Length: 239
Image 1 (cartoon, rainbow, N blue to C red):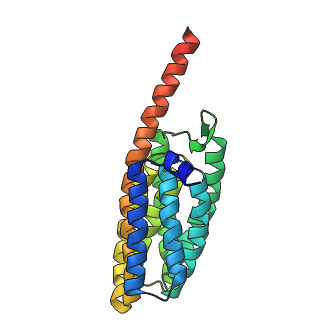
Image 2: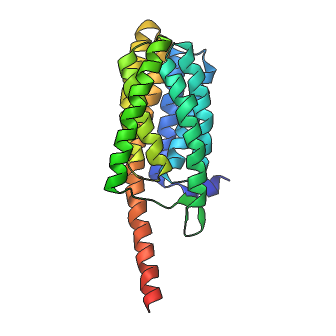
Image 3: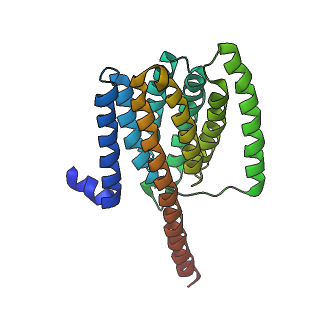
């Protein structure tokens, strides 16, 4: 099992995974030591991030589990925006993304999704749809009396972009998630002012930010490699 993991992940990816896990554990035992649900969510998040960076559909299965746990954590601090976003949007979209990734393996390899690109027309459609969803959610969050409503609304916008681009198998899903991580870091810093236990959540999303930045470059490399393979296959078919 260990050999298969070493063969699948590069040394840099294993180092990133290990350091991320260590940061999550250290911050939990320094600032929390009680909320094991948050610890579980953070550790699952670290695993799904490294799998998503590889384009592995199993990562989307873990996103579904993470969304459920994070929704419960958000409810505990009245971050209803986060709760509604992850339970009502991220989790269902992760199901669709899972189906999309499973239907589009690269070269028959079920552990790697085929990287996709979206057209300018679809980018415009996505932007308009994001604006509509964000405005709608603002009034929903306002009705729920959501704490820190403006950053919570911004989190909805970045989350929607992220899940849409994940579903469409675009490398820019990681950029949208990185933007969402920054918003969440701000949100949970606000929460940690009232309760220092949430510092561990701040550390968690800081780790997520680094992993999402890595994921973007990983997918760009994946795209180049896949295009090279397709080019070689095309040349062979011509011959």
